[in-house]
Structure formats: structure tokens, C-alpha cells
Length: 233
Figure 1: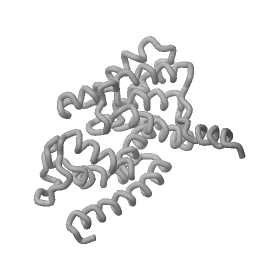
Figure 2 (figure 1 turned 60 degrees about the vertical axis):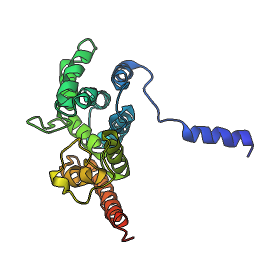
Figure 3 (figure 1 turned 135 degrees about the vertical axis):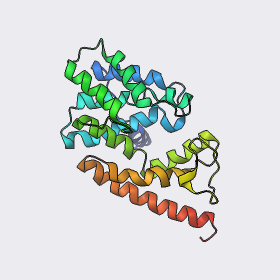
Figure 4 (figure 1 turned 90 degrees about the vertical axis):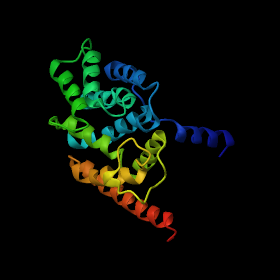
């Protein structure tokens, strides 16, 4: 095998996953990406792309309308920068749904699909009286939550803590009483109060299958983290 052939093969292996090159989905993708110019690393455009890839994995298995689902995946966090700017005092899902409605208004999609996309964006956080009701919203909800657990979830938890200027760990404060967005809002605190509960909130069968493995990794990681922090290992 020639060196040029080896280099060509390596370049193929490193090529990013295919992206839409034309059509409505590609147009929505370009519009959505513009909202992430100043995004924090824990919720940046790369997070959106990972969620999109999970939607491509789960959606066909669950029978989702993939045009709706892909559009919603690209748009789901376009309100995140607004939430981060005020340290969480507004809901990025609400803001994102408002922005998505304006983006979709002039696009050649039927009314039902537009409403479904907006619903997906609004319901992906599921913190109030807007639970996901369509299969597309359920798949997006699961994909977004799955990116918060497992190895990527652990990495994002510490990235978010770093963005806040939080310490590595504080064994003298119970995670349940720590104030969010404080110096004690650590990666371990995120696991205890939020990430450890995600597995039981997943809505689709395929999502639950993926969540089981990712959850098991997190449990193992934080058990070892606490042991190493205490000098037991």
C-alpha cells in the first residue's frame, strides 16, 4: 500500500460526518449556527451537532419525521446564550421557541410541521407544563439529555463548572444545598442533583437503551473520583 493511499485513507477517517448541503434543513442549520458565535463551551454549536447526530441515530428507529426532527435539533438551543447572559433567570427553551417561530415563518413548510418544530424546541427542556408530546419532540428531548450523561456528560459538567469558576470538589458542602452558578457548583454536584436522574426520564425505547450504558459509566467514574480525591485509591 502506497504512502499516498494511507494518507488518503486517514483523511477519510478524519472527515466530519456528512452535513446537509442544500434544501430547507441546510438553510435552517446555517441560520441556527449564527446564534452560537459567543456561546459557552458547555452549550456550544458542537453540542448541537452531537444532539443532531443522536437524533439521526434514534429518530429512524422510533419512526420520527426526520425533516422536522433535524430542523428542531439544529434550533433547540438557539436561546441558550440569552439564558447564560442572565445566569439562568430565563428559560432558553421559551426564548428558543420564540426565535424558531420567527425563523420558520417564511420557510416553505406546512403549518403542522412548523408547529411541531416549535413544540420540539419549547419542550426539549421539560421543566414546566410543556412536556414533549410528539415522537419528534420525545426523540429530541432524549438526544439532548443523552448528551448530558456518559463520558461526554462528565466532560461537559466539568467544562460548565470551569465556566463558572467553580472549584474541583467541595466535600464539606452537601451537593443538594449548593446554589447553582456558585463556586461550589462542581461537576460532582451536577452529577448528584441532575445527571444521575436523567436515565429515568428518557422517553423512547432506543434512548433508554443508550442511557443505561452511559449512566453506568458515570456512576463508575464518580465512585472512582471520590476515592481518588480522598486518597483511597
